[in-house]
Image (tube, rainbow, N blue to C red; front, top):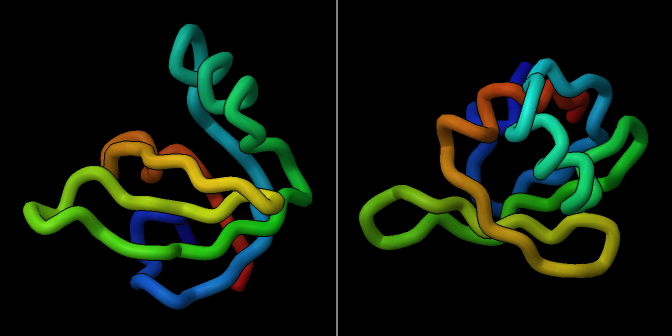
Length: 73
């Protein structure tokens, strides 16, 4: 499943990331690496972006970016 499919309150482990190029590098720089623990904190009022807790810190990404991140519940 992808990170985009999860709802607030869900926790998961990142298994794979399919983003390439600048987006892939940006996500890796933010800490999206295999094995990272992710908790979905909340969605913005108009759905985008989604706030995540990633290995102890908060980060927000767009839902279309979250589609590239494969996770395991």
